[in-house]
Length: 459
Image (cartoon, rainbow, N blue to C red; front, side, top):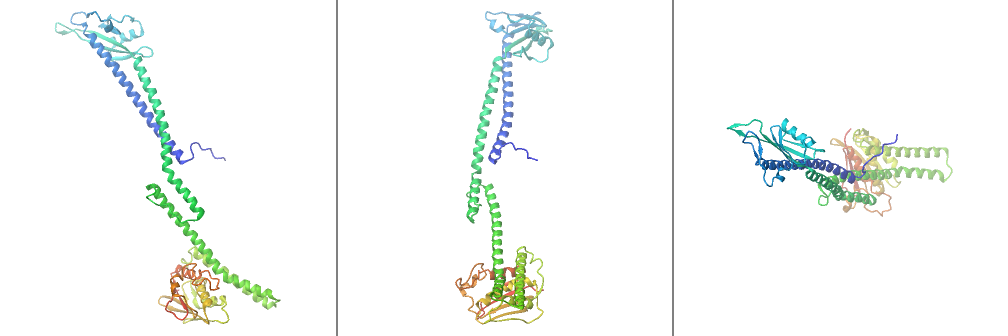
């Protein structure tokens, strides 16, 4: 099924601007309605005030002291009598010259006087006249006269309606301008606020291209919210870098450890292909290749299991002496060297599995065979609550200035000594030993040659 098309802006800047525009529209609509309602109410009060003033002026010409209402006419009362009706009870005694009692306005005036109720109403079509009734009470002999006079004044509402419409149209035009400015300013403000995010994106792209170790989190350069985002991204980048370092380290260690059995396979094949061999020689070559392939498989399983942190969860147990002898046999010491593997306890048990024990000792033993003059010894014994394995040689030893860098990956005391080492064996041995609660140390006091001590947990 095809997804429904998405309407609206796709960028964060556009979405925030749309949200701001919608909110401003709702607010301005409410304010505009309230403003125009208040303005119309104010205009109506103005009209009522004018009608009241006119009625008060007309009331000065009406005499209600006698039995009948009388209107005193002055010389200039034409303007005063304009749009004014005077009733004595329900009897019309004066009306505007241009008005008739049967007109819509006249009927509305009569109903206003006779029915009572609201003092002011709108009349005409469409309600363009405002009418207000003001009763006058007279006295005869000290007693209030029944009935009384009523003055009704009228006012044309056209100017007030025009003013109200002008206010409405003006407010709508102002609203449109304000909404346009709100949208434009919001886009500008959001763009300025997101500028550091674009800079961070460009930095991330550049750093990814050159594999730089830069960081985002820097409060002086970023707002507090973006600084927190930068710190979170820094933590994520640190984890990614740690994973990449771990992956590179695992690849290098696998390459380092697989080099010896692979070289053995190549040597066996070269020896077998050098000249015709007997069936016994062929079987011996096959056995050697099979043993080297098994060793490679074991190396891969051991290192990958350690990389998945399974070795520390289930360390296993192994007899130290047989594992050490297998390791020595697989390294094929040169004929001019004497390699001895001994133990005070033939059944000495270590708290690691045999494959991991071989992987821990193999780099130390290979390093000793590479630098020894005539003698290499491996000795295992119980010590305290664990197992101790010493790997010693009678070579030139480790230069004192380099002793502190022995277990740094990729460091070698003499890169031009003619050996193909990559400086990964000793760091690998220490890392594997620590993964099961053990340790690998260099004994600086041992002379001549070098001695490395492996301590492992008991079985």
